[in-house]
Length: 156
Image 1 (cartoon, rainbow, N blue to C red):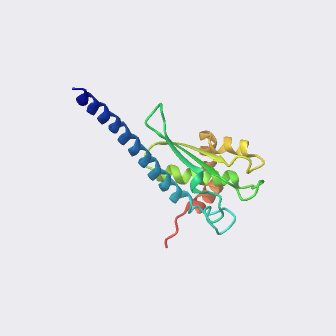
Image 2: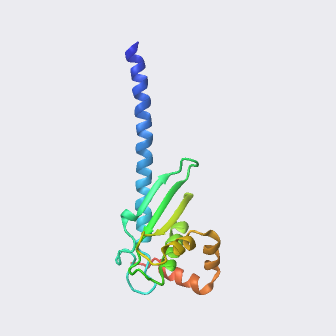
Image 3: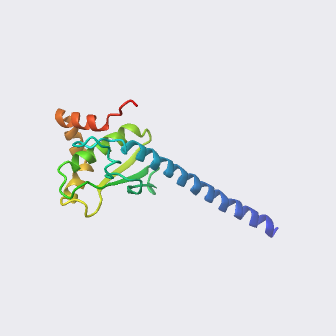
């Protein structure tokens, strides 16, 4: 009888491990998908992509399952090319728009400048994570056009 209870106990442990393994697999797949999306965004001033300029990088993306809801919490960190980059807010906006348009599942998206990489990182982080400011920015035709040009996928 003891072995019977032990078997049930082990099966339950295996079930939990299997569930955790699936969650880790899903998170890894989502991370890869997001990186594939944002690496192709073009820099607003240069003909290069954010990946080529090392503004975005795989290690800058983390995906965690929310303990409160069934949402994935995605954090994207990016590193502007210079500490006083005047287009850092626009780059953050481009990242947000591309990810939100392309990922079908609901996610909580947080975008941040790498700590210490920009002189006004705290102000920019507030702007690119404020829904009202994002909506207002995308109502500006000039800004919207700049974002659309940066996130445009060109045919190969």
